[in-house]
Length: 233
View 1 (tube, rainbow, N blue to C red):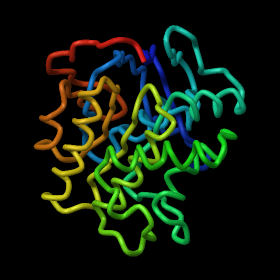
View 2 (cartoon, rainbow, N blue to C red):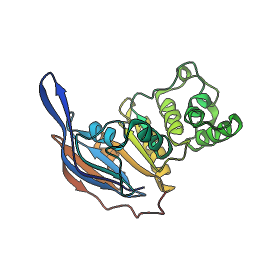
View 3 (tube, helix red, strand yellow):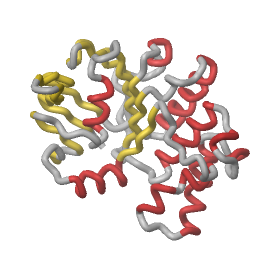
View 4 (tube, rainbow, N blue to C red):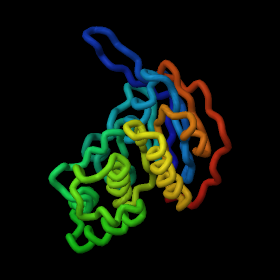
């Protein structure tokens, strides 16, 4: 899936004042790329991620997924696209505390109406892919931070989405564990999955095939070779 932003703006209201989150931002993410988005706090990184993930609607401009403009779709249509084609990973894992790892991972399939037997099979497969099978029946409180993030990544990929959007996935982790999580993301990318990652860690971002730098709601640099685009997912 190719993601294209054309002159996207996103403004927020603070009282009666309009605060720009994104300013005339244009960006193309091609199938198979691993793109790291860097920038200081308040630069618009997370706003950009929320727009690409269909969690937030642009104030102006177009957001195209495989050439189709999604910027003006209604909430139900956006939710269907997001649930089927986009996997989301956040800094604060968002695991349900009273559910085991496999129960957490299969949640997106539950919402999609998949049978329990098939849900279990797919969830176990996703957990194996992030190397967490030895914790499959543990509750989140019994997991380390890195293990919780692995569970969150498994949940994000269980529906086999076209693209994985990760917003500061290593932000709450120590450097060694952060490198392990980066290794998981790189392995998923090597399988052909498109990944866009917001990060504050430049050393980790260098592992991506492309680095986009933001400041004041704008893309100010776009460096690194484009990853060879594999077959469209």
